[in-house]
Length: 264
Ligand code: PEP
Ligand code: MN
Image 1 (cartoon, protein in one colour):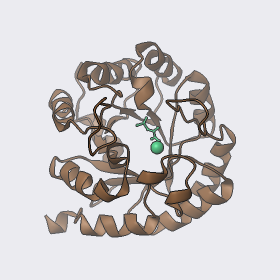
Image 2 (tube, helix red, strand yellow):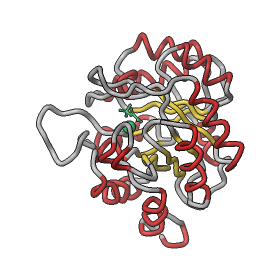
Image 3 (cartoon, protein in one colour):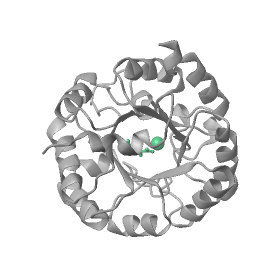
């Protein structure tokens, strides 16, 4: 498969002088929460607001997302702030609803990328779309599964593609929630040099205090953007509380990271 330069068009269309910033809560919780976070992100470098509404949780009994109602909340956030929207889709029903709601970026989560049948189902449901579709790496450190998911989408004539590096599961405890295994992301960039690659430091870190350093490493490796979980009250977030940062902290981080070309 040949992924050519046209893959970068969706990214270039943002017309930014810095890497793309996608930010927002792990999960949409209430309409007030979504809209408030959107307003807090509006005057930062954030171009795209993320929020999960269908949440695949590893163990049952945790918050599994608000479901389709969250699409309306996201649309309100977009109407009020002008930011584009991103959410996770994990089956063809989600795809149908997200397309109907005109969500700008759909991403495939790490627990879906491991399953070729699910990826194929999502690819078929998205066939020919001009929406942006981002593929998170699979939970396990398997480059072929990640490449294969991209290929299934490309073969379904989805041209606005990218990937998200969110780290890999390990049984041993490390300082990371998900080990970055940077070499796998580098190998993916070697295979598909023109495919935009976004860093998800939040799921790599699992904790707030190392997000900055992970971002810096990603930017040094020429990542095209970052996706950072952001909440006005991180400690009380309904999912991934330990790793979320406030919109204010995000704003400061993007300044400290010296992301703009004029600094480099
Ligand atoms: C998320 O982005 O909130 C999420 C569930 O991520 P992942 O699929 O990387 O675990
Ligand atoms: Mn999360």
